[in-house]
Amino acid sequence: MNDSEPDYEEELEAFVIWMKDAGFTPYTQKSYLADVREFLGSLNGKSLENVKKLHIISYLTSVRERGSVMLRVTASMLRSIACSRR
Image 1 (cartoon, helix red, strand yellow):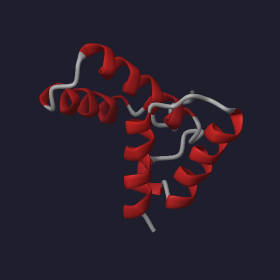
Image 2: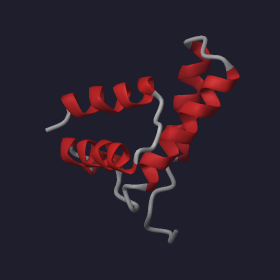
Image 3: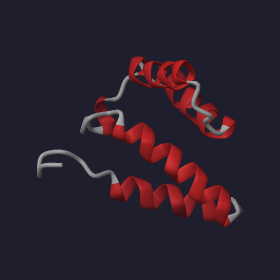
Image 4: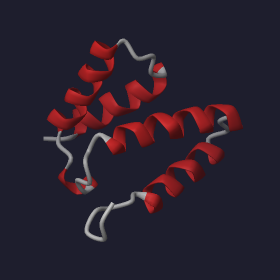
């Protein structure tokens, strides 16, 4: 990653804090964090402000096509974000 690409660490830290506050188990936190990191990696350095509904739907489609097992709740969270995007 170069200096101009985001590393998303601040957002990931906020996500972990939210999961802890929401009472998710450490195992669930670890699993969800891995799923979210995979999604962020698919953005190829795109800032979160520039992520559109199409990016999220495209990622979810690629996960389904690969036959990957993605946690249902994580997929649901991404779909919720997609619904709120243009």
